[in-house]
Image 1 (tube, rainbow, N blue to C red):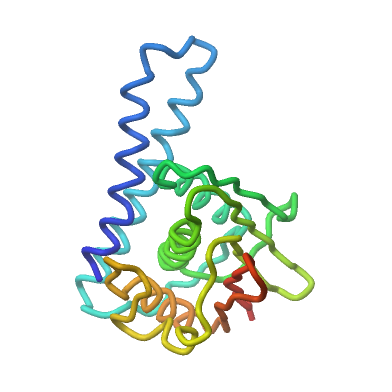
Image 2: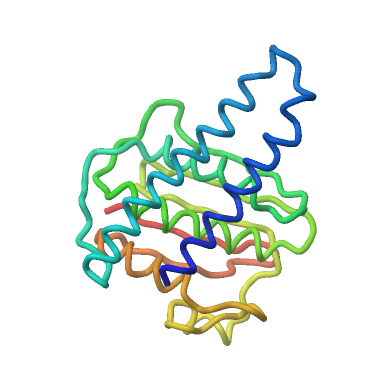
Length: 208
């Protein structure tokens, strides 16, 4: 599980750094902020991974959630920005339906970030060549929904999605959704993952 999470970060962070190195000589001075932002995303993500992995290694199990007041809107946008560098050459559009103002919840930012990264990664994997991933935060129902228009989930696989080592991917380890489940249960958040209609699969998180 630890190796799985490291790989989830190494790929997109390396893509960010390689992009910066390849394009730094071509960017005009007024575009320098793009390089700064890209590198800052890499730095922030590595720091959060460092904290998460240290806690994980110390206890050899998911630590109790260290809940603090965090801005969920900011976290969602940060994760989306990171994962845009991990689309594996696919044409994927990220669409946001989020409040303009901060939306504060009590959560462990490192753990919840890991969960969101895995959810978005699965959505990316479900899209073959081109598609859309949508982020919707329903403040009235206190629900975050991350949906995609990929190939969907077979009904026969639905009940096993969160089982350890079960994967619908050819080279999947069956760890990502297991970790998502543990993190969300650790927070007391109810959740579901299902294909609602053709080309509409949604991961819903009820924030309590």
